Length: 274
Image (cartoon, rainbow, N blue to C red; front, side, top):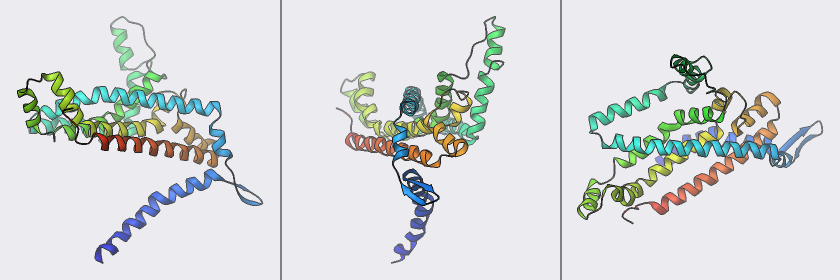
């Protein structure tokens, strides 16, 4: 009986901070308001499937998938290096890896603008070498770089947390049975680390596909992503109905991708030694 009463604050918290915003978004996305009252419409959802907005969605998915792939290629070796150190060095390295995350997201992005701008540090260094200046900013490469820098820890830490829990006796047994290092990695380490990999992919892809600060600053506003589209509808255009409809569509896409990842993770649970 006591546990039943304890659960009420959590229910209230969920209603206020989770269900209520989702309800408001759904309400704005399926209704319109006139002098005669409020009506029902699906026009906002239909507008999203116009070619200009489909291109925005495709660009967002492309950049998010690219940055997620780069984070995986960079993050897995980093996680293996961290997991292979002794506990004292490991804790120090993890702390050094996490410290930049304590800095404000916006400041970290502005720091890259200082590095990449026309008269920034990188171009100044190229000038010292006698090379011509390059345009590092305001292109897709700069946007991907900003995403990778900001979201890389979200890939490394889940993989690292799984790698350190792998039973070392499995690796020793594989070696005793004649497996070389690549085979041990392919048949033992990587399958057992798949839950961390899938968690990292989810944690990087979700914010990457909806970010709006990075493309606005490092892309110079030349690359409108889905997050920028939603921001524009709420802050500049004032079309809350269309902005809410786009938010609902993104919410559905995220839920679908999370469901696929969750199902695949369950299928791979306990994998290894295939």
